[in-house]
Image 1 (cartoon, rainbow, N blue to C red):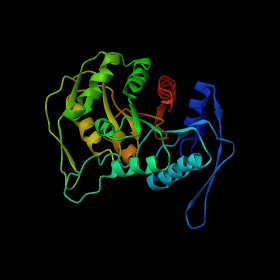
Image 2 (image 1 turned 90 degrees about the vertical axis):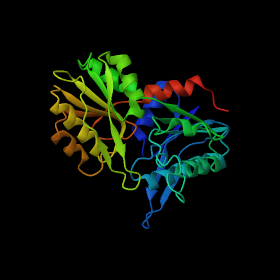
Image 3 (image 1 turned 135 degrees about the vertical axis):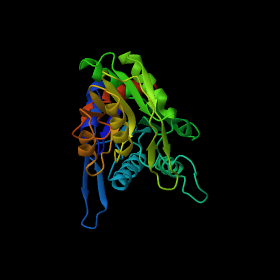
Image 4 (image 1 turned 60 degrees about the vertical axis):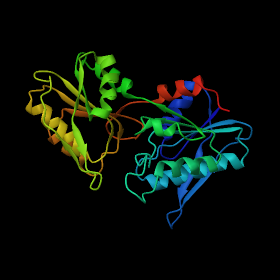
Length: 294
């Protein structure tokens, strides 16, 4: 196997290659004056099993185009198989047609990757892993919640209460609780399908005088997380941390979260940021060795 670290995941790609003790083919990349992307492999990939590592966080469109170019380039250069590691998989939150006439964007992304020659996709904490099972190409969705919980345990948060945003995501809190063993629950939420606005219903939670970690897959604007933090702060929680796999943190979301009463934010390096304290490289390296490319 050979790792090709994409422009958006240079450090993570190198970490994965180091753990697997395999060769890297560097990517030469630049942006033309009109904004188009240029991609060149600085090495041979013919008859090799290629692992392209490229997150597709903002700027999503540019990162996706680079991913398509790298995958199709590997196909043209006669790679034996092409695995794309997409730690944050853009456009997968539109996982069904909520309203008549909407584009089914996750289907479009997978279709384009298949057309580019991709034979396997590995992603982390997709919004709806079940929908990924419907496609022909092999897609493996990994969970980094346990890694986040392990981080907090090492930082002295053993027995902290694990909280998720929404009843449907309660499995996230349950997964974290397997490590922290402090009990778990969920904040009741309701999303408006037209506006996307999320409301949090006030309810009693067993958080008084306790450390609380609020886990989520993605923090984007941070609106729902802020409401949850205020809720548990009002109910007497001690230390409160926001933990997520994908820290998009649009505009001033990070500042707003800390100003709302959070003692800190911790994320993974699925999306490189100032709060990416936990690496998913071991998780991805393990998945790559467990299942051989075809």
